[in-house]
Image 1 (cartoon, rainbow, N blue to C red):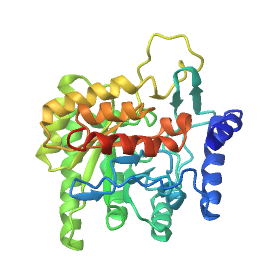
Image 2 (image 1 turned 180 degrees about the vertical axis):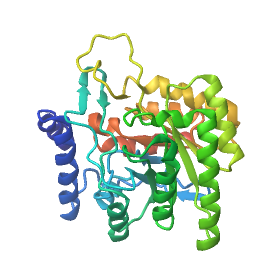
Image 3 (image 1 turned 180 degrees about the horizontal axis):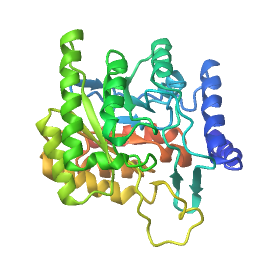
Image 4 (image 1 turned 90 degrees about the horizontal axis):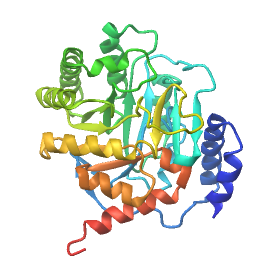
Length: 342
């Protein structure tokens, strides 16, 4: 009820302004001891990528890019939180407006462009947080870095976050940084992942721990491209695939803001992302964990992604349209579906 009232107010604001107001409001409410839901934590312990998750519902990267809201977001009952995408140097992102609602389809279009305060700021925020859930950190390249030098940016961020992150996600699939998706092409992908694997081995020897690394892929890949990605992930010993980012494709619908340039998420991505998860599951046969994300607006959407082969799921656009209750609903539905005899 409280979120329904808040949503009516927030949806009168510019979407990016509403995003900021909602997060800072949540932070202040949490500091005062208020929670949107009582007993929000669903305990459904799961081991994925060698990590212990308290439940299978996580927050997708993009909502808390800078780690400013870790404590308050944990209070919503997430089993894990993925921060970022963060880049080596701070950057303002693309010109505004750059975030658009499509309320009829419970969807969003964004062309934010990795707006963030830089990896050093994020590190300080993680260090000062009272973390009680698994923390992933999603890393990318700066806009000004040539694509042929992208591996240097990923290495820089990896070295910075390695000891703090429970797992790291390599974002090579945002449509809002020029040419970034070319890193998904076979030759570029093998070069990048080989470089990262060498750096990780050095970090493992230095710190005495091997941190899981996943890659985040687009939903706009064909079967041949998916096979190449699975081959590269296997070859270099990466630990998971986050499937999927936003789509640059558009359904044949006449909806306001649908023609805006950027990545499409929410209800118009649901089936597309689930199909990619199913294809990945068939290719990997359970050998590579899949984190399913894209258009989860109901607990059934979450179950569909688990049933398609995801080991974990993440929310973003669904939180905007459905509110914090979606976290508990999805976690409970997944937990109940896993009870023998159910």
